[in-house]
Length: 300
Picture 1 (cartoon, rainbow, N blue to C red):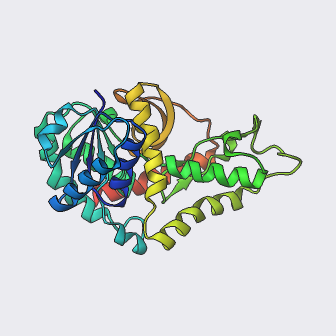
Picture 2 (picture 1 turned 90 degrees about the vertical axis):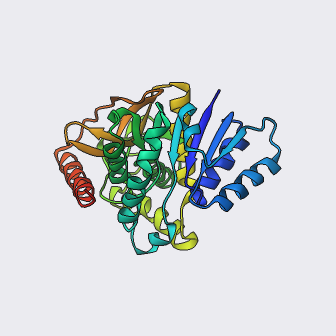
């Protein structure tokens, strides 16, 4: 039985629940939020949808998390995004301290996938408070940033995003590292001429970040992109596919969580897909790791 728990039913948590049910991707869904009325409303709304295979929906029961395969942390305060991507850190750290014990007591043995921001730092805090093996505690990391960059490259090259291969690493919506030297477009290294002209890497980085600003500035949140990123991780875990994804993981070289491509499967994160970075890209990754470590240290 495919069982998933979602903690936090804001824009992101609700949309993710809707997508899981609509896609028939879950047999049992455990919904938890600090607002009982909100949880009841979401459960009722999902039941009204009448999908082909209606999953069992359990509400506000931490002990039911024991039998889930994945716990999704979708809690956060989207209203703080207007003041900065890292504005949620203190509030989310307090939330982690409040909820970690309840999750521990449930007896859950699966994978925790964190969607909260700042993603790498809060994923690290979850792992510290839960005291679980690092492979079992992961975050969506720069998966969404990578998708944004692929779209930017594809538009500049006049191609479809599926023709673009590469990863953005470092710190989600923060100190992003764009290792363009490792990217391929239509099977060619990106530094080479594509369709008769060279791609402007500086403009690509700007356009990649612009998408995030446009979404949050216009809507106040960016739930759709992060939910589809989460679905990719969920599918990799549930199928034990070993798919390489740029997610928030503990990186032993830097002794902190950061976003880096790894194999994702039933046990969480697996083998790293080591990138051949240029010296300047290595330096940028070190700076990102330091920034994340400082955020984590500020909440101890």
